[in-house]
Length: 344
Image (cartoon, rainbow, N blue to C red):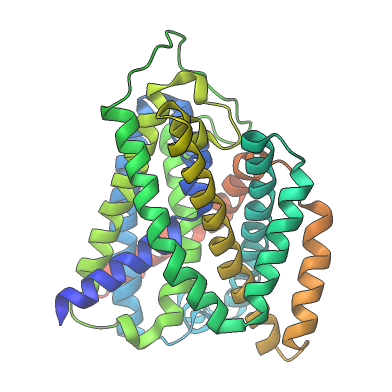
């Protein structure tokens, strides 16, 4: 049925973009809220771009009969540049996993007041356990935890906007970023960064989403992402004292009381685990498919590389590394739109 495909594609799109960096409020803070109310205009722009590019990606997959993201890159950029795109995605998956583990350390430090490294090590153990069970572990942990993430994130942000009142008269703090200084460019970079990963998810699903109703699902997904981002951005702007925190949405939840803050911390920590598990599994599977390492050895090497550098600040990764990958991913956006429109 078309409505089922529409819902599945929309949910897949939202799930591919709305990671723990999104749910924590750090991404929305860095890419939108720091520009004040112009940042909300950036959210609208990003929502339109997400919808357009989602439709374009799905149409091209159907036209080219794509069944893997390697094929998609080869058609889009040619075999030579396609290999570079594959390498870019691998690095993105690694950085995404690093950001989630680093974010868990920041969460433990800001809310519980305990060592970042305790949070990092505990989170690493849970991720390793989920990865040990391979695909079954990934599917189970996502099917249970992702719906909770969506409900709590939207609920807390909406309640902060309409229920609580701000007692702060301080002006909105503009957080400096040496890479991005314009709200339009920031919105485009945010879409560029996330579409690169969304391409991987859509292409990996292949024919499962190449059905009637898929394009509408991409549009609905883009609108849903805009609504989520707008609600978080508006709640951050309502409380200027929150801007600048490592995990700003925990500060927002704290405005509603101790229990909402505690539950949001738990859900956000679980969201960080699901995002890291998804990135880790995709990266390990890519290495295993290349025939270079076994699953167990690839997993062990990944953690050996990750844990020593996991103490990097979560906000610094989002502020500096994410926009850089957004610039690198800019090649995909015009190329997708070009091939998409050329077919009409």
